[in-house]
Image (cartoon, rainbow, N blue to C red):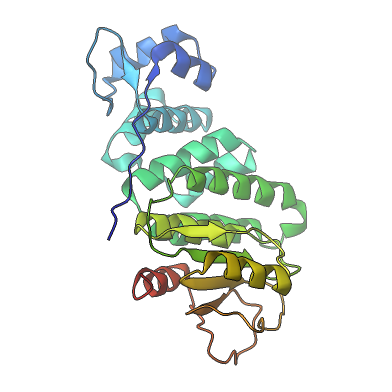
Length: 269
């Protein structure tokens, strides 16, 4: 089995990070001096270098300060063990349409948690909070959160593998692509390559794609009522989402993201 390839670590200078945070460089220096911020990136010279996790922690620290937390408390929560992002912190960022902060919070959570955990314990609860009684007034927030989640998931690199890929697509007429974005990223963590065709794929186009790629499995998502596709020649057909009828013939029906990952990570190599 081929192992996933880790992307080279990227670091930034203090000046670049200050610009990203929209802070004076003197503020960043003061934070280091007063609160002893510990950086995860290797420090080999006389100037500080910041890795992705460090930038995420600083975004989280700034957000907590803007929410009214004292600077020392915000530093402790952002840089130490009790600084884990929770759904409430992410929801507050999204409600303020602070989407760069929301993405940074998701990035930071993904440092210590896998995609399935992030989806189930962070993303879904926040989407649920936005889809309550005031859902008609939260469409912009839902779209903003979806953008932030997709941006964070896209940073998970695709594995290099000679094995046939898993083909992912949304049923014709369905454009809710985010669940499949999460599945692609979760499979990548398991070294499983996936090819995502996007939203609203007609059955004829899906059959053409199957003929071209010879996938190990086809996953078709539908959030609205849909009929199972016909004549899909793949070893496994997986119908995901709430739109499919109860009986779907030979197709498999995972009930959750974790179940889909387990199903597609085994027996399809």
